[in-house]
Image (cartoon, rainbow, N blue to C red; front, side, top):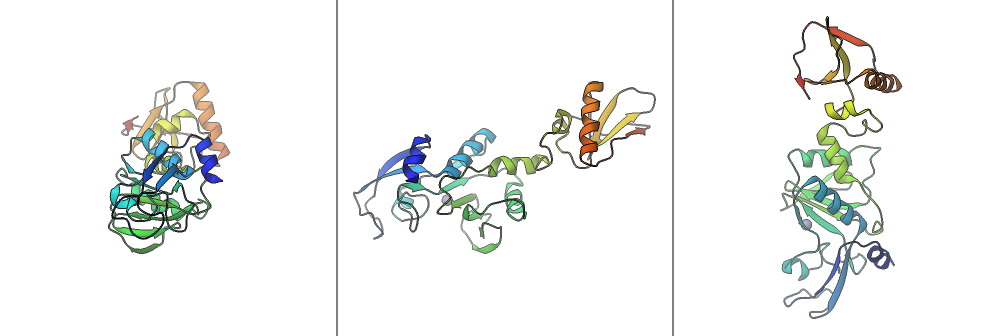
Length: 238
Ligand SMILES: [Zn+2]
């Protein structure tokens, strides 16, 4: 049933003919197989596209189609007609961010069957299982998670930007700064301008309305909302 639902959602789809030289796993050579992307694969494809992370493939090439892995729609042990895998070239630090997320107790990656990156294979929880020939990120989705919506790549991007988990509902100034935790308000002696600052960066608060919103947000988080007076401002303006 998931195939019908996934097609109704408009996920990427197509068909192929089991090629000459295929292994003995069904279907036989010459049989046509329709495919549609599992929802997590489609979501990662869409997010990767928006983030401009190079997609290295979902439905596989000839060599994949001759075997029966997750880059086919006849993967062993999975639903016929559904593609469960995607290959992606991650930006710098991306592999570490994926592993970090998988190891967070409150971040659910149980829809992942396994993933390969930087020459190793990991389970959904980021536990290394064996070596792999893949350097790029290969994600395989677990059977049963075909219809699930996921946000993994958006979350990896947030981890890389320093905004993960803490920027929800934050005033725009925190997004300009690129993080929330540890941000403080500073003002140079003799100046009326107030900056949100930290980690070597600062961003100017446009007016009292923005200042009020930032202070309120900091208070809500139990963070210090006092304005610290400084003699000189040395951080980079963002
Ligand atoms: Zn792959």
